Image 1: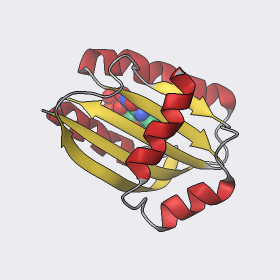
Image 2 (image 1 turned 60 degrees about the horizontal axis):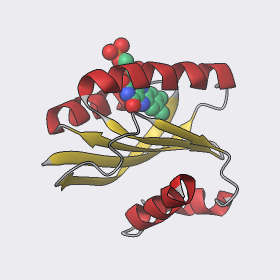
Image 3 (image 1 turned 60 degrees about the vertical axis):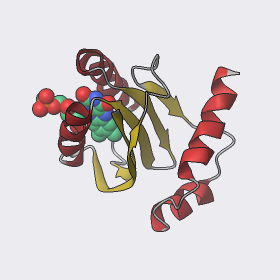
Length: 131
Ligand SMILES: Cc1cc2nc3c(=O)[nH]c(=O)nc-3n(C[C@H](O)[C@H](O)[C@H](O)COP(=O)(O)O)c2cc1C
């Protein structure tokens, strides 16, 4: 069994493209060591991240991410066990400015804490990217 966490947070508005690239580059190196996979969406001032991997590693990473000043107000939307990773070849895929996602989607995701549909919504979006 592995751990899967999905969270939404409010990104620091001052973050530059370069700083985000740096963040993602670092995350990929680190995640390889930690056997962590998933994706990070940066859109309309929010981050949504899907993290999956060995339980201890994932929970430890979440604690670090929670304290990271590059974003605020992190809300965990999903915290569950999975038989096996879903995105096991994405060390941390980065997606930004996804046309299909409207601003409203993120605001309601945040205020409604995702609801039960978040996993389906994200899986559908990702299917479009691998198709
Ligand atoms: C939105 C966001 C996503 C992040 N994703 C990851 C990640 O997938 N893997 C990772 O190692 N660090 C990630 N980080 C960075 C961590 O918060 C933290 O800076 C990093 O683990 C370094 O911690 P350390 O220097 O104490 O080892 C992310 C940070 C932010 C703001």
